[in-house]
Image 1 (cartoon, one colour):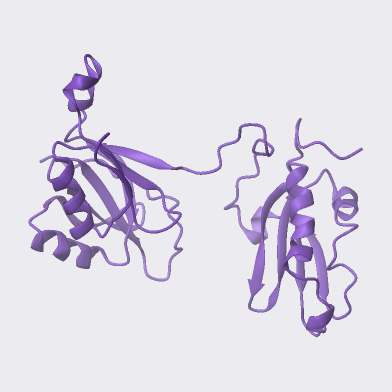
Image 2: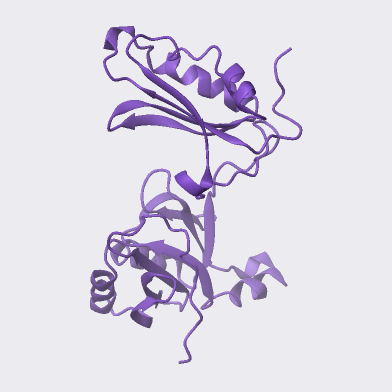
Length: 260
């Protein structure tokens, strides 16, 4: 019987690394063959991460198992396991030596209603056309989807990115929806962007006449940040990592608002 992805999941993590090393490239399984093991682990609700390694070349899996014996069993049909010249390793994920930057709490299994992507975030604006122009010209957003008749519009920074849905309130929505939506205009959105240069972004905003609500500053939580608002007063935060620091957005939490 196939292992079900439902039910309680083990919390111990294991890593499988297969370094291609001196292996004959013609002996390596193709992309579909290499992905077979990850697909099987995902179907069982055990997969945490999978992907190619480039330096050195190889393949990585991070997965859950009750113990090492179970980990070995789960990888029994791994197509990379018996390829000559492949350096095949399985080891425990130990936070004290490898790092704790992974959530080991098991997510819901595939097909069980799990969340797979943050699709879009709504920002309420007064003038739809003016807002589209500002977000495109000043922040570099692209229009991903647009329906002028219904007012629906989504903008994004590129394919696959989380979109901003610009919402212009309409009286035909009726009350209390219309008034409640209007009240959201000009609020702190809680939306955080990452940038490659806070000083350069500050100059771009200044040249566009945008309102900077907090000048570039280095925050105690280790980021160079700036706060700014769109023409309707909706406030955003942008940060860049410290030089030499991680590129992860972890820790990029809003700093306490300064008194104006």
